[in-house]
Image (cartoon, rainbow, N blue to C red; front, side, top):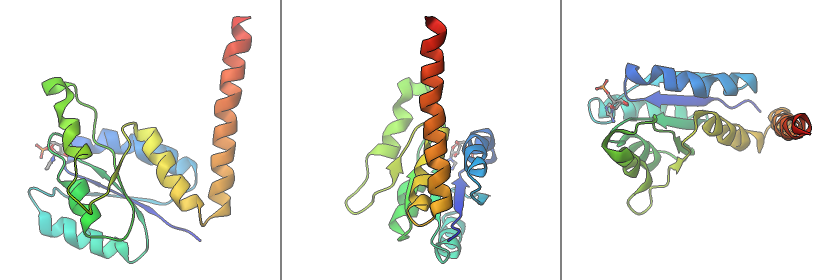
Amino acid sequence: MNRKVVIIMGSKADLDWAKKIEEPLKGFGIEVVTRIASAHKVPLKCYELIKQYEKENVVFITIAGMSNALSGFADAQTHCPVIACPPYSDKFAGADIYSSLRMPSGVAPLTVLSPENAAIAAAKIIGLTNPDIQQKIDAYQEKKRADIEEADKNLQ
Ligand SMILES: Nc1cncn1[C@@H]1O[C@H](COP(=O)(O)O)[C@@H](O)[C@H]1O
């Protein structure tokens, strides 16, 4: 069964970050749709996008910098899994991150900070019902193990 990942980002300023999530997903052969909608500025658009894609049982990945309302907002409106992947920032001592971590009761977006890892997490969810994707995840992990062996061998 083919399921897609829908990336929603708060601003076009997040595009470079989104691409770092898109690339590994496409490497796994997963269809990715990328949209821009800010929960602060266009909440109705966010809602409509969530409801539109929810019908396809997608995995959402949400990207929102500074003050991340988007991930909790999205998660509370859908039965689909939501992975928050806020863009990296060390401004204000990295305090932006708390807006992704602290959620009210019943709101459960998963936060994954690395864009590549967010893609892996989404691929694993899709892999639960897709043996092709499972095999690709196995191969990816095997490559990671081989990289360690290679690096270790090169030190000897
Ligand atoms: N949290 C939020 C709500 N609306 C936009 N943002 C985020 O704020 C940053 C700057 O957005 P803008 O370009 O709209 O100023 C971007 O990371 C964007 O995701």
